[in-house]
Length: 346
Image 1 (cartoon, rainbow, N blue to C red):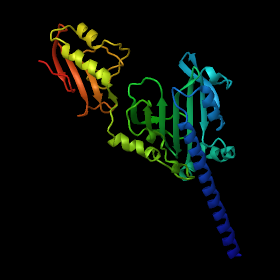
Image 2 (cartoon, rainbow, N blue to C red):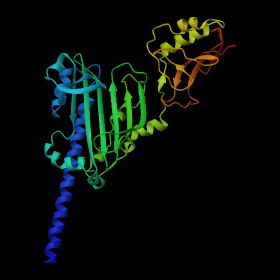
Image 3 (tube, rainbow, N blue to C red):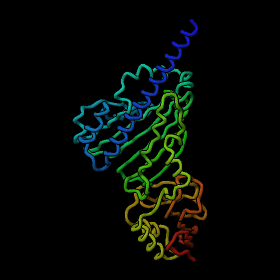
């Protein structure tokens, strides 16, 4: 009798192991198909119609975000729309790698709901979202989430065709959740424009699909290891003036005369169109092409970044800045340059 029970238990274990292996292979295959499909979508070029055809292979949800004003503030509401709205209008396409395996949902629900189960069986998922504006794809967001007992480790990649302050930017942060599984979400985020000079843009979609194995938990850096490595050791700048802009900036600064008013400096250096302001740290920095805005300091300083190593606040030896110092009468008294091709004065 004992031998029979042992044989039955062994058969059950073999069956469970076989099912887990089969499911892991299936999920890995479907996730690879999703990433391959995403790579065929080119932001700024792919039409909404073509993106819809690709996303429909993964049973995509088609919707728009409706901004609603409430007494307590604004709220975004997901509103389902006809698929044809993607052809020439605006829409969002949301789809996941497990969309073909709908039979998995009854298994995921208790894991999603009960944290104690996720201690022993963490769950993961790969998802993508395509944003269509005026019939053209403008953004692609791909994320892989490892949902554990108390944390949801997330790595996500945003590819955009829009003008952004940094054409290649990596950030690490931890978000606090008010709903859903996990209390915190340690996140690794990479945002980039395909026009970036970065030589290895493929790394942004090189997700570690081994994290999809049933029962495996992954940290954010295990999900996108190449991006974590690039964040720590990559030779890239958060912000870097383009060659044409840098040439014009060098000429404009070198032509400035000491004693010029602050207004003259702003109009001279800021020529070419500035629209908004962004602060890197307490030095009140300014940068092209986002904009300029005067700040208070004693003596007053106007600082432009020619190159900014990373988005973080702390200064870095590789930063290149040009600082304009004004006296109490708003006259330019000094130019301190830590940038190539621009001379300091006096």
